[in-house]
Structure formats: structure tokens, C-alpha cells
Amino acid sequence: MRRRPYNIDLRAHLEACDDNYRRLTRLMPDLRQTDRREFRMFPQGAALVVSFEVTYRSRYTTVLTLDLPANVRSIGGMRIKIRVYHDARTAEVIEFQGQRRFKAVYDYPNPQMRQPDEKVQVNRFLSEFLNACLRHGVAHQERVMIG
Image 1 (tube, helix red, strand yellow):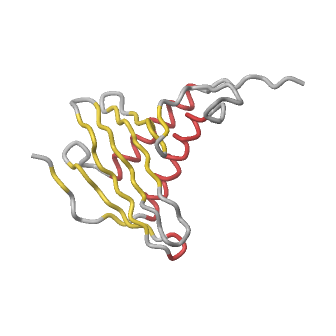
Image 2 (tube, one colour):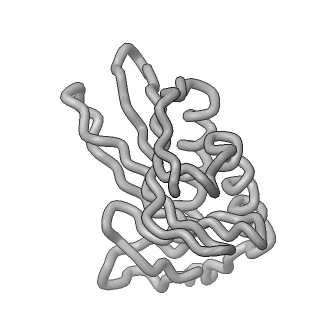
Image 3 (cartoon, helix red, strand yellow):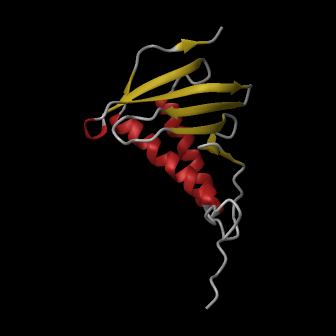
């Protein structure tokens, strides 16, 4: 029996990216003026520091790096780059753990061993992580302002 090819649900994917924009602007309401923001999270007794740092900024676009350093309690490090489109009010993952340029759909198997819906999965993961930051994160008061 032959598997049906995966087709991206573009509407659902774009809605998820729009929701990520709203989550990010709740976490960083001053995103256009702040270069860095940190949160502390305490899942299962571990103290984690999550940082959001602006690595590129233009009139309509900002690129953030979300960084979660490795923790001695078996929680590995994580780095996600997110492109935020202010004019379209959307945000998408452009790099996850050093992997870039996610296609909408991949043949499977493929040389990178990416899932057919890899782009959807990394953006869904970002949604879940941002939700965890909103629910369990405690923001530091220290902010770095530009200019």
C-alpha cells in the first residue's frame, strides 16, 4: 500500500505563526526597543534561564535568538532563531538547533532525515515553548534598551 504524500495545511500553519507573534509580543511587549529579555522557569525543581536576544532589526522585521543553555539536570541546551514580521504580525522559526531553511514539505526519507512536516513541527514546538514561558516564566526586570 502506497502512502499518500503529505500536504501542508497552509491556513493552519499561518495561524500558528500569527499566534506565535502574539505570544512573543506578550513576552516582549517592548520588542521594538529592547535588545534582550530573560525569563526564569522552574519546571520540576530545575531553574532554567530562557533568553530572547535581538540579532537583527529593521523597520518591519526583527530576528530573535531564543536560547536555553544546557542544564546539569539532563536538560539539553536549545537555540531557536525566529523571524518576526511586524507588518504582517507573524513569526516563524528560521533556524532550529543549527538547522536552517525548512521547506514546507519534505520527501521521506531525505538526506537530512527531516520529517515531511518538519517546518510545521518546529513552529508548533515554538508555540508550545512560548506557552510554557507565558505560564511558568518569571521575567527579569533588567532590559537592555537600544539607542
